[in-house]
Length: 305
Image 1: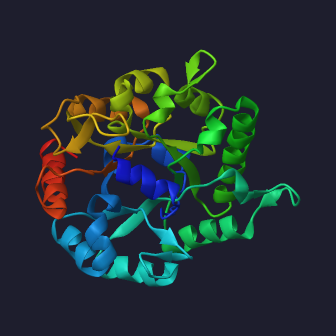
Image 2 (image 1 turned 180 degrees about the vertical axis):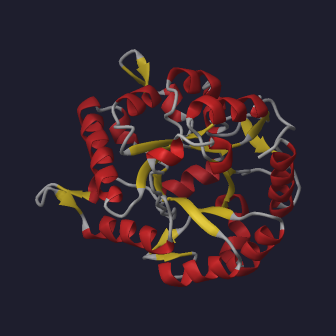
């Protein structure tokens, strides 16, 4: 996880998304047929700011058919309303099965015992654009140290799952690295989140690269919680000089780093319950970001995805 990514999340410039729980009969079918590979648009964040249409076209031309957003601000995706962005995607033969927007404790109105209108609009726009998973990729620092508040927030996760279900979507959570380094009693915060959310309502989107810097092992979590990781952020990581935030890793081209990416993909497919594989590369070692994710997709295809 890059420092810029953390700052990006904290300032709320992140995004929204939604995703429907696949029907039971489909989940029981050949999972290989259901697998989808996409790209997290944060990977190409700079050009998505200056030329979203052109960047999406380059991704479509590279062979991508699914994207995951990281920008939902004032009810717009990269400057487009939900209806407009759905058309932009459709014109390029793209779909957006998931996206990121941070849900906070303040999105629940205790006086009304209901979600705020702002959060309801978030879910509504996710449904309009055709997404299947609404994924929150952050947990406020104040909640990490207050077990009672954390339990209430997990209840809010489940309630959001119920809200999303009304629109044939599913709520989800995306990890960074603090979920591994932070302890709740004698378990990690990530264990706590998984154990205190209803799998029928809350999906887990594991980021195999983010957890690496604090000792998290993706295979261990897949084996410990089979079927819980409906979505996976596919990353490889290299070691770098330690930065100011203490992190000494960054992402790189798939297969060029230290992670057993192919082994994780295989386990996620067979045991993790994963049907959505989202490529994300946040650092490029001097290469062009769009070219990097093109190569990443080619490697995934070579691996059979």
